[in-house]
Every structure is written in C-alpha cells, then in structure tokens.
Length: 173
Image: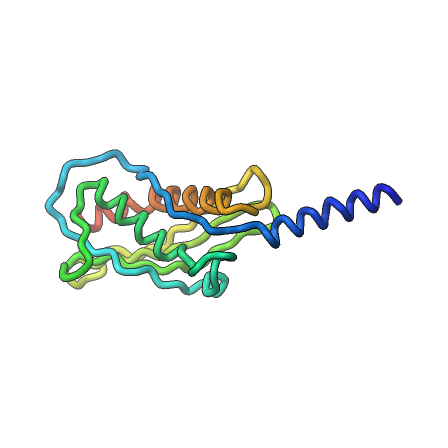
C-alpha cells in the first residue's frame, strides 16, 4: 500500500510540475559557423511558415508561438556570420522556410523537419528538407530553460546541416 501511495505521489508531483511549470522561453542563439569576411551577396530571409499542426497553438504561458520566428532569426545570424548582408526586402536572393514537423516523444526525443527554399534571381536553386532529432538526457522538458535549450540545440544542428547547401546555392559553387 505504501509503495502504491509513493508511486501515485511521485506521478502526481511529476504531472503537476509539467502541467504548471512556466514556459516563457527567451530566444538566445549563438552562431555555429566561424565568422567570414563580407561577400557582397545580399539576401532576404522570409518569415517561416508552419505546416505542422502541433505548432499552430501557443507555447504554454507564452504570448505566441516563437519557433518560426526563432528559426528565421537563427538563419539570419548564421548568414551574417558567413558574410552575407541580410535585409528585409527588395532583393533577388530570397530564402524561404516551412516548419514541416516538430515532435517531442516519451523517450525525451525532440526534433523536427524544416524545408528550406533558396531563390536566386527568381529561380529556385535549392529546395531541401532538413531533419534533426536530439535526445534530452535530463528527461522531460518542464521549464522555460530546458525548452529553450532544446530548441537552440535543434536549431544549431539544423543550421549545421543546411548552411553548406545554402552557401553553395547563393554563391553558385
């Protein structure tokens, strides 16, 4: 009987902690690419769209869902690090993206798939999906800090995969 009560107590504590934990993540991102000199290529990153129905809602206790915005900002940070000039409009080089899938499973795997499209002078020169999965060793994501850490890790791994392709597509090499 004591064992059942202990298990029930731990279960309720876990559920209460996850259900009522605050998740007001802040975007912090450090570039994964070494700084390169300016390359005279101007590019615009369009706002990312969201195909994943799971992301259509809001992050709990947050004002809005920030994953598409964070993905766009991470790409802009990386492009600037690679020497690109990033502007808001009026250029022939445009990068578009779509959050196709995101997930967090019971094995503490967190990941997703992002579609990146690069247009150069109105022509699509790259259209590719990038998928990344990370395992969160600390178990469940119950705090803003743990959520932010996982999102940052996923974004950095996605950028590592995508940047060589994007760089080649924009520079024509």
